[in-house]
Image (cartoon, rainbow, N blue to C red):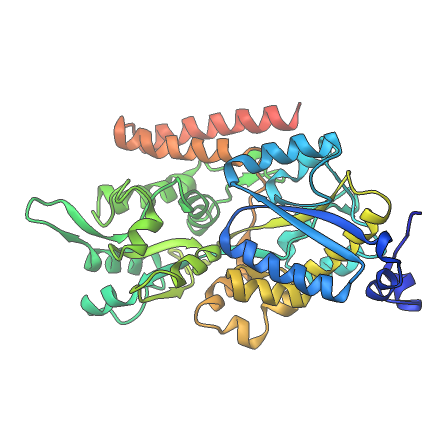
Length: 420
């Protein structure tokens, strides 16, 4: 038998919990949930599943997780074979590929009305709407902020984190240390396009220097400009001119910060859990420094949940109920407290307590002026930016020339993707 469950029907009759509880034990429904492995995310989802199953005793949710490197491939293979998840977690930038490959199906509009989502969620979530239908929704979103080492600040006589890019350079200079041979032993600020800096350059610095990185809904590259060059010049000057950082220092930027060998580090809110677990590290968080004219900007990304095309009949109905719960205010608050990622709903994120929290607050406030890059291929687009900086360093290529090469390469990638 196929059980059809809709929110309107539930409000008029019985709840999903009562509906499934009334089913005989033999008719209980099991659904599969997949996500990539990140310890705090798995812990949070375990808690959400426990809460959901307690409220819906007729449904069992089995969670499977894979290493990030294998996750996308395994998902793409399993769903068409009729195996794998009923509800799947995916990166927002993968949405078009998942729809095109028929791996996910639209969310039912009576349970997830477009108008309510547009009103209740932070605006960047609207990228999940295609053709008047939402295909996926996040439990949480991410933004960037400036992490700083309180112990190193105190040792350098610095009271407050920098509020502007000019102050950032001055603060980083005061925090940088070198040995007798001139080698950096402590960087004032970490750098590395392999981490979050490609987002900082693309969506923050370019905009702060008066530019716009893309046009035409992110299908046209627009950073081979004076603003793009000024942003690249500022970024590379941290090492080449000011000497407050070193590319490849301790291999990974976040590793240097966790080891206490970096005064400042730009990273996402997802880093909070790992830093909380780092013994002996006394750290704080501030909003990203403003640009030359006071312009604030930020980058936001998120992972979403979607119902796969594998889910049919009673598994589909159970998946709808599960999606409804994991995108609820309760679930978002739990995710914030366990993972450190930010609530996707405005009314949860912008509570006075959350918005003014000394750790979460800078990230949440940054959402108000954040931009979400619509990637065709995030890995390839990140590599183009990495190569751009590497050419100026290793090959000593002029900044303007390397910027032009990057813009041409990325435009070729975008044109091929959207014209296929």
